[in-house]
Length: 270
View 1: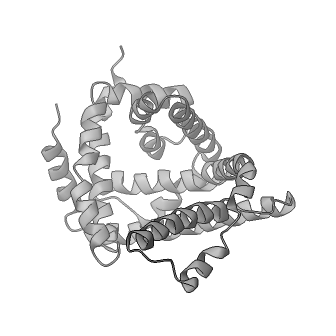
View 2: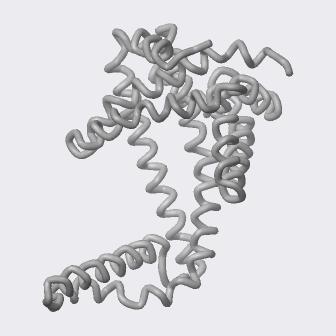
């Protein structure tokens, strides 16, 4: 039986003497994530250009936000018994007519989903597995910066296959039923950790192992995640979110310790 305080204590112990190295790894992963997001954005733009779509999803989102802001500003000025100045009105003109782009939303969402699936399956998921491996190894002091690229030279195809199924299953779960989707997400939460230690594990074995490890623990894992909300809010407020860089090693190591604590359950059969 594990408790939040015990897991966090173990995480603090694992970070002792290794904290700044873990912060550096967090920075590396953040830069990689931003680069992958940029590639994803450019890939969407390329497909939109090839398909001759007149608008992007970002432009539609900006238009909807600005339309709402304009209505809000109008209401404020009306309550004050005044009209919105022309300078302010002109600011919203470039976003007028956003409704005409609404029919493109479904196909733009499909493009976004498909391009993200490709980027996630063949790049981001592998960095995630390597990132998890780094924090698992931190428990024994054997972590290496090169862990971040571990999945690219160890079971690359198998990891891509399993993480694709993992993404698809959880996404469909959320789309069809939100609550069951959340439960499914927690049920499979340790799949990337299992791949970090055994990149050649079978798909069914990875899913079943994570299910056994989280059986009876899903709600406790959810509460463990919630317990970091206060720290996250404080970190976001600290220097425009820079504080998150220093918080993430603690959170990541906490879940690596939880994985190691629950790992013996993967050998238990129903």
